[in-house]
Image 1 (tube, rainbow, N blue to C red):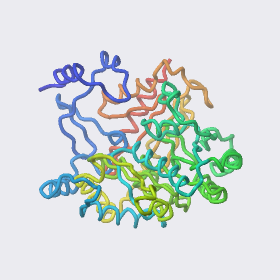
Image 2 (image 1 turned 45 degrees about the vertical axis):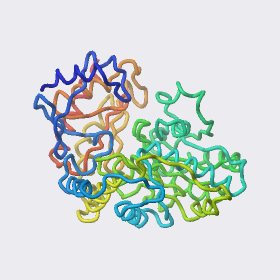
Image 3 (image 1 turned 135 degrees about the vertical axis):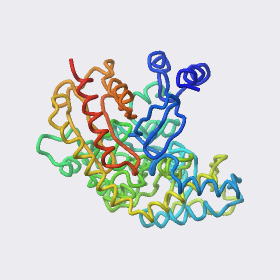
Image 4 (image 1 turned 30 degrees about the vertical axis):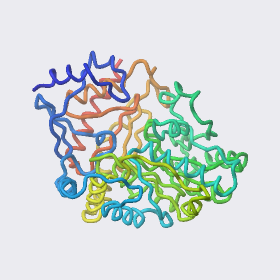
Length: 448
């Protein structure tokens, strides 16, 4: 079997996600035969460094021996069971561990199978909480501009990336959108912290105007990932937590992409010293092995639904594969690696190496900004500094993508933003290799 044969078969029957399929007439999908560590290998024997963790999910490398063993052992015991009225040891253990790891006060875990589904749970649970507390006027949500929370209709409603949202606008909820604290727009010489404080005035104003009709504020802590990897200071989260408490509004933290060490701490909220009312996790939860997500919440929220059946206060939300034992086994093995291998400390060393590898791009005539938060780094290409972007139709980022594939790396830019979000098992020398590939790819993409 070879790449060409499999690509032809693929294009006869598949419809790929987040893709204009017409593009594949020019650049066919690459069939992957096997993977190991940071490497993906296709059917023609070419290898690619997985610089984006296969869409931000893989933490400890492909075919990780410890996670493999945990899933294989679980497969011999129990592959799946309904979670309504039944339970199993892997999900109990996982829930105990997540409650112990998460910010203090998050006491209950409600599971789903994707990040979008976890967001739907948080939105519905917050809305339903206020109804159960006899405050039915609360029907709206506050979100940040340039945010992204998933593709299902509720999650899409509280996002703000036009590329994903505009077509479906007539179907969506109508949140209050608040200007993002995105530090890309800070003034020359203005610090991240000062800009966060200045930007928070918009949120304070929105809460003052809409608190009585608001269920929750939803944010991606520190990094707006699908929104071009834009970043902001932890101070904003601290101010937001204080304001939500003052106005009696829930805070939803979407850490689906930024949780589990991506930002330099286990959870991004830790850097602000806050606890959200809902913490949504997914992607890296299973180390990139199986679909699993979770919404953690407080005992106060849980008790708002706890009543005799006849009171009709139950949260009647479900997914067929909720709490799948195989996925939970992978998640527990992932947490074992965090516990045993001092992952966060090692990541700080890798993050420093990433900063060094990308430092030469800071003075590039067509780079507006090189920014980094922990193990997430982004390079924003522009036609002219400081922030004059290229016409999107030119697809400069796609040129970087093609160059990287030709030179052994999977980089999948967001528009004209090239980013690194590699597995944590990447070697320093491989980071240097990615840096060299990105630099030359950007040089070629911005020439002329």
